[in-house]
Image 1 (spheres, rainbow, N blue to C red):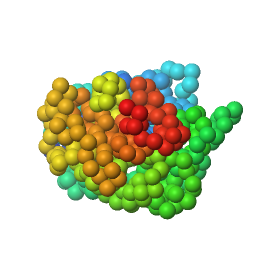
Image 2 (tube, one colour):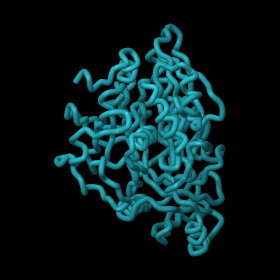
Image 3 (cartoon, rainbow, N blue to C red):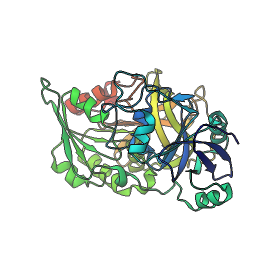
Image 4 (cartoon, rainbow, N blue to C red):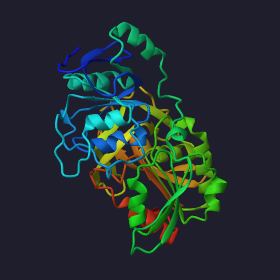
Length: 403
């Protein structure tokens, strides 16, 4: 479909038969994953190390990636999680006083295969039109037909339980920085948590106990937390029944709860809603989200391929962007609905396609959002949600009671 020259040859093959020929960078070899795109112009190191990208090949829509190199302060986890990396043009030089390695060296150190192709715009359009799909990058297989056979035999994302792969193997604690007293104790269920998330809470006086993804409700409650946080993460939320069970146990205990991204989907499932796979997901740092209670719009950071269906809506993989627009808020988002834990409501919707972006219980101190309030590298419109969580732990009262 397109060609790039100047280095070892590489192939990118999508499951619909699309073939892009380009130049390899990072580690040579062969890698498989779900092909997605990210619209961020900055923050590529945070993208690479975000556990929510586990088993995905990520294409960057910005044309030039790697300009500022990589460092040891910005990673969001202990390793790079993307299966493969696609860019139009990797930077030849890293130019930043903070850089300790260039992008190519970082990918090599973590065994990640990349490809540079001039057709990233065409690739993005292909995914937008036909949806996220399985793909492979190879520097070893010159025959696209043979590589396509292996792509079609590779696992998809639906039904994939990946939170247990990326989670911490052992609990650990993130304490407030020197001079900040401990005000709250938070149990954070690591479904693929980013390092900046507990740091944000710690800066507000939270002592954050980070727990493995399959921690039971009994074990969570045994830590005597003031509130419970369910993090972002990869895979299909419907495959993480253990997290749904833990969420239900915590809800029954009446503790304040805050969930983001995957954690928001887990809350939705615990409330009796359904989840479905988006056509190509929301990934990047420019998603407009409306708070339905105030009408305020935030520009937000996203990384998710699944979403919560509106009450009474089964949700389908064929739903396309633009089918629902912000001027006509979906009817199911306008009214409270009943759950085993009292009344609930959709709190936020995406203005691009009407996707549910937040949930809240009206009679309990529980809320969630589908985006990333820690937003490394940005934007920071939603940073106040951590303060909201602290307020709920302080009062123990649903914010709906104050509206």
